[in-house]
Length: 246
Image (tube, rainbow, N blue to C red):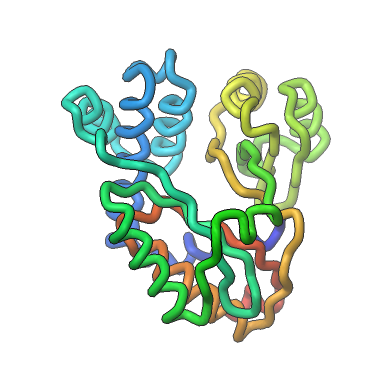
């Protein structure tokens, strides 16, 4: 979904640099600790942990921070975290999925609900917007790894389902359960990926104008500022003209 990949680029460009980076490191570390706690602390024997470490490395998280996050799991930290998904509507009826990891379900639910209502949205029941998304594995590569045909062939060989190539790079999608296998096969063919993670891929989108995008960005920024929130996904679509004005 073009809009969503551009959203990531906007965030990167606007870069509320240090504070945002420190928050991102903390969220990626939490994911590593929980993944290691739920399985083996060796990434080679624990696919979820391997993907969490890979994603952290792609965001330039230092090796000592990654190692410390894995050690926390063996020290018994991360026991109390539970994963919760919230679903709701943002401004102009855009579907929003919020993935959280929390040690206090009531606190997180209350914060997420009030963030939605303060920013022109409303929290719905679980399943209220989930049907507008598919759970997929997503592997991204820079445009420099090869042309669209080269990447498409590598993706087919690796067992992927779909490729979205543009001048910004290549986004390869696969079944959520195949992500570890597909990303390993792609790595053998194309080298280290920019990013490897599970995503919610919109099946229907909502077109936004400039004002709608500004309101949505305000909501997403506010949600992502919450330490309990791991990631936010929306189904917006916007024209290049609108994106350039942001």
